[in-house]
Image (cartoon, rainbow, N blue to C red):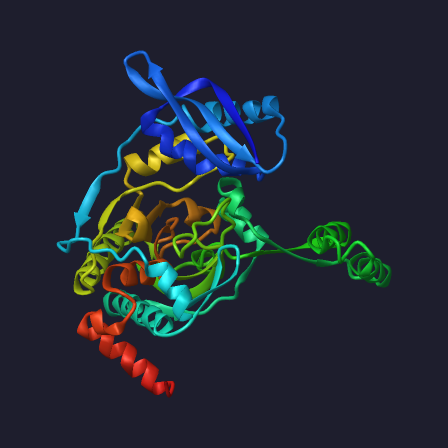
Length: 413
């Protein structure tokens, strides 16, 4: 490992240190760990440097240039708006810090790759039960139409939505080998050559880079974009249309916790609202109350607060973050987990008319539709549940215990 202390040309106020921390790993894949260095700047402390550890020798001047650009373009221009709490559960947090290790020991979780896990019972049944609660609430309150979508989504759809330009760091593109005989033969020769056994990963990576092409599809980072694509160019038949779907989603993170807090591949339940401004705003607000009630029924500690998305590498990053927070376009349900940390298990989002305009979706009276969505990270939510209630169903609320037992009985377990 190599260690460097990189001074910043502009200091970063401490209230924006979190925004800087979110992005440092994306500056270079060679960064293994980092630490923010603070010093007095006038009468207040500020971040003056970043101490990094890397896997390979670093071009310190280049790293400083990239960090300075990140700070000047995306961090310092942000106007600080403190997260505003809007709700808190009445339950205290009682956390079991050995939860993740116990899941691995019991085979309830199995790591198959970086940020990728397989699961066993009773975690599977628990996740399904939680999902059924959210699905039922959406259908009970809004008559939400259940849909199912593929894991691949056209890259053009994400470009149209603005996702490509806002979150390039998360994207996972789908590709395949060039469709011709010579290309297949060359590929086989590369991966079968004498160097393959010595460094198979690097050999395969070079071969894929030499012989593959983007197919025009991306692994879906969220379910809701399928909904907007499905209704592109159409006029709604009601002032509010609600759709719900569960799907596998993919977001490439720079680093992953050794737990289920942040995954590369995960399961998302989304509830999408499309309609007039007032109807979408009211639907999001009322569904927030429904979700908070479910959290209380589950006996979970947690709170909800204003939040912002991790916009990145965009000329309007600071403006977008400030607007989201100031106008309270995004709320997150925060649940405590092991290690003194917490996860954003649910997000409640309002998009205004941006996506309705991008996809030419109109209300019955011909106006551009407004949109909103509520997204549940099912593995995160279930992980927070077992961190607070334990891994054995005997310690779970009766309704959850009975549902899980019934599910396992149906499967013959």
